[in-house]
Image (cartoon, rainbow, N blue to C red):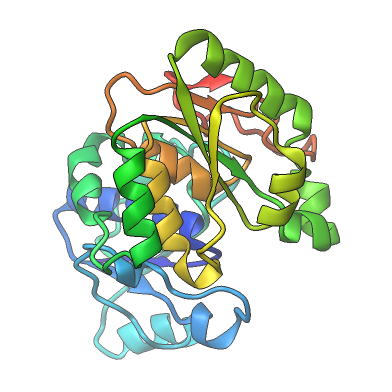
Length: 280
């Protein structure tokens, strides 16, 4: 069996699920999720994969008890800790039949080979709200471009700010100019965890713009569904908008991502951005 510990927000949960699912598929074994952290540790995060078409099996024990629990049934299990942010070459070389993973695994190199499976797993099952349904209809009928601005704890949490920093306005201006040079009559749909800041600061000239201001953090999966249906994407240094862009199935999509993903010089994001995306 493969067990993956889920941590963080929706984007992080999707990376962890995708990597674990890829390994379970390769080993042709069962796949389990340990989502206990959302009961014991996270005050501002929730287990959001429940909104998608995943066939989950959950280990609902405290993390410290998982290995002990399995040992009662004489099941030996290897604990695999992610060593760095870059792709781990030994990820698929685990000889143990039972593996417990802890990490973030933020690279499509872990799961590119099961992309069709993941696209099916990450189909939204929870119905959209009426405002989201209405804007989705617009998104599908224009040259839609999502713009995601991540602020939130990147602003309020000192540790997060020092690690990630913020995409500055110059990045968004350059991204919009690139879109304008390649896309006829783009219509921008702007998403943010600080939408009022976005309304005051994000400018796209005379192009049509809709600010998605009707979904809060409890409906973040609706924002992701809207972003993935846009024809093109301008993302932040955020795993959330990364997945919105990755799930976009437009074969001619333009995805623009920040070249500088981290503020910290100690972090290496070389394996994070797919080769077909544009980095600015």
